[in-house]
Length: 363
Image (cartoon, one colour):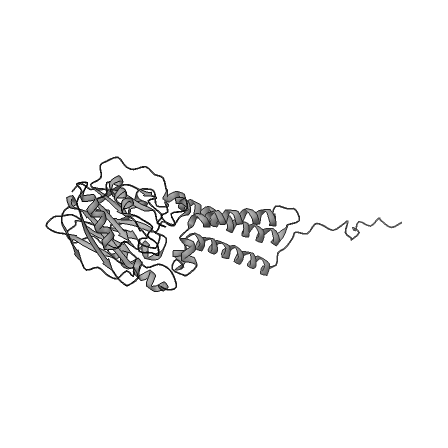
């Protein structure tokens, strides 16, 4: 009798389980997808790193980070519910690419939300008495309709205790009327203005309180929609500049818009004698756009320094978190300490006024 065979019968029941193997091409594809998702998320959070912050479409979306944050989170949650990468049937490569898509979308939303939260929008002021109160307000008087009245401007100056008032889209005659009304309240103001073209929106005015000291208007560069520059006469006050940069629209031209913003920002460069410079107005750009990220040495955006950099000013019809912070006060941080900033809804203008309280730093 022959010995019983010790060999195993081959077949499905006798086969050892085989590990799942992914082809090199599939693995490479997933890696590329993950890298692409990470790059796209990074570009949606910090377009300036990729040179995209001045590209049409991107520059407009970037002006409203809160919308990107909400949209990213909503899209990520929707993708999570639709794709459901946790399902048992979603195995292998499918689960990986679904996870990458969901993660990338959520990263866009959470990343932008973190930027907004980090900049703040409701931080209280620092204790101290301001030496200079600066107000910037695009009145929209020069538009098709007069959105702001003289009474409303007088009330704005009085209520804020403003020493310097930048008024884009405000004709000289209106600024003169405001100054005359304030003089009746025993607060004298000097008036300066410019108009860069026949367009009614290209006139910018600047009011400077007489108790700040005498000023004289000097030459200012072209910023498309009007810039007024005034220097102190016989005292060590700061150089004051009211700006209105070009709008990021096709009629202006994308390159011309970026150049006008850069020119407006350059006006904030510290003076040789160290008396400081204050530049305030409608920059038509946020601190996320490349021309506003390259601030001169020592210069700070007042709202960002005060912890309210996410407080929007345009359009005024939206809550501040859903508006774009395109109106700014730029100051020499070596000369001035920013005590606080806030915005004010003044009239039917499409802009909110931005108010900055500044204190001189000790020598």
